[in-house]
Structure formats: structure tokens, C-alpha cells
Length: 333
Image 1 (cartoon, rainbow, N blue to C red):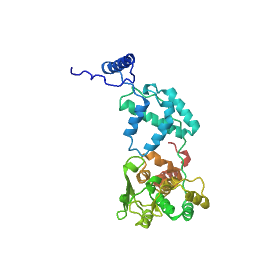
Image 2 (tube, rainbow, N blue to C red; image 1 turned 180 degrees about the vertical axis):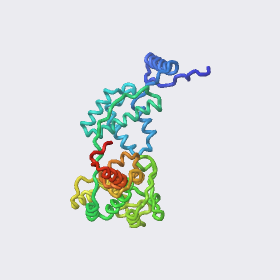
Image 3 (spheres, rainbow, N blue to C red; image 1 turned 45 degrees about the vertical axis):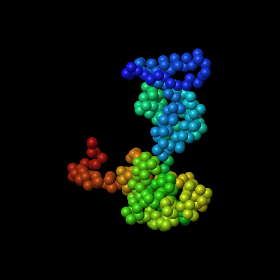
Image 4 (cartoon, rainbow, N blue to C red; image 1 turned 90 degrees about the horizontal axis):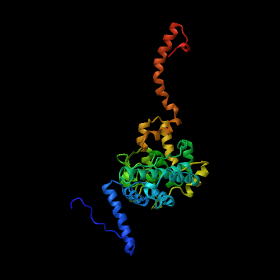
């Protein structure tokens, strides 16, 4: 009959007829509840994880997600999604904080929330997602070098790392985007490079205008490798956080500095040069302006000209007050 369900065809996992009939009856009851009463089928955490990984395999953080999910398996493995509640998630939250830090724990919690939310909103496997809070995190770390410090570092670095560091500061590109940059994404004549969305952290293509500092570095690399821009002894570079990098920092007397801090240096220098938020956001490929505002404090003098726009008006007000013989301190709003 039209509209009727197809016959159940599924292995019961047992040769015992009585047990097989019990399994059949349970499956039939579950289907009836789902189709006639609107009761959702129950899905496991493993099912959700597999679907999530298939749908997000394009993400730059795909491998990081897989590593986190392996760590979460002792807590969530074998659980049905409906049984994952606030109590269980809080246990994960505080366990992960003890093992690492609040910010790291938040990355795990955010992944759990994202999977459960998709299971609820898109897959319709859940009626609701349990509410839970992430840890409050301190302001993001901002560590940058002054120009003299950067020059000291360049003198101590081997040539291939020196060129990569200069290019990183000139463009603001992240470590992986500098290390893995390919000639097919560079146009020296047009002074332009780009990072495809599949290789960029926020998932969107990123346009990179090339200044003279970046162009000088690129011209030194021409002809060294058919596909990769940056190489070492003709080979692709797998890692920049090497003994040579650490030794150069030590010889230059620079402490508490990571490769990613070259990106902070790029942003800090732009702020000090007066680059406004909306331009810096596009130059660095940040997703939101709020992420760029972390650097506002490093160059308060950049706002001096904006504050000075009221100077002419202030002179008029003061002149008017003086004509009346009143003190400026006697003015009321």
C-alpha cells in the first residue's frame, strides 16, 4: 500500500529465534514510534562524529578535530546523543582544564557544542542541546618585536629562515601559509599573492598585496624550486620551529617569542604606522574587527590626529568663555 514502510531487513546478530524475534519487535516498535508518533530515532555519539568528520573534512583544523575527538571518546563513546547532558559535559570541562588549561578545555567544549548543535539544527537528531558555559579566557597574548630587535634576529637566522621571517612580517601570513606558499599563488608583476580558502584558517580566500619588503624576498627565491617558494637546500620545508630558530633567538637575546608572534609584529607595526582597523583586518585576513582591536593599545598616538579634530572648536569655546570673563572650569554641560 502506498505510504507503508518497507519491510525490516537487518541482521539481528543472533541465531536464536526467540532473541531474533525480540530484536525485530524492538526495531518495529521504534519505527512505529518514529513514523506514527513523531518520536526521533536515537543516534549515538559515534554516528554524530562520523557524520561531522565527513561534512567538515575541508576544514583547516580537520586533523586537530580528530585528535580532540579521540580524547573525548572515553567520556562520550557508546553514549546516545540524548544522554549527553550538562553533568557529563561539566565533567569533561573540569577534567580537561586540570590536564591542560582553561583555553584548551574550551576548544574541546566548543567542538562538542558544534557537533550537538548540528545534530539538533541540521540533522534533526536531537530536540535540544544541553546548555553549558565555557571558561572565561584572558585577553589573547600579544608579543611583538621592535624593529631593532627584529634586525638582531635576522642577523642570527640562517638565510632561508631569515627570508621567511621577513616575508611573514611583511605580509602577516601565518606560519603554514608562508612555509607552504606555492608559485602558482604568486604574481610578482602585479605585486599580489593569494591563499586559497582551503588553506586559510577562516576558510575564505585571502588576497595578499605585496609590499617592497615582500617582493624583495620573493625575487631572491625565483628559480630555486618549481612549485614551492621557500625551500632549504632545494627541498620543501616541513618545520620552521627548529633548533636553528631557537638558537638564533637565544643568540639575539630574545625571550618568550614564537614564530606566530611575527604575525603580531606585523599587526603592531601597522598599528604604530596608523593603519586603521578595517584595513588591517583585510590585510591580515582576520575574520572580525574585534580580533584586530587587540593591537589598539600599542599605538595610542595613532588616535591623536582624530582627537585633534576638536581643537579648532575648543579654541572657539575657550575664546568665547574668556570674552565673558568666566573660567573654563566653570563651564557646565
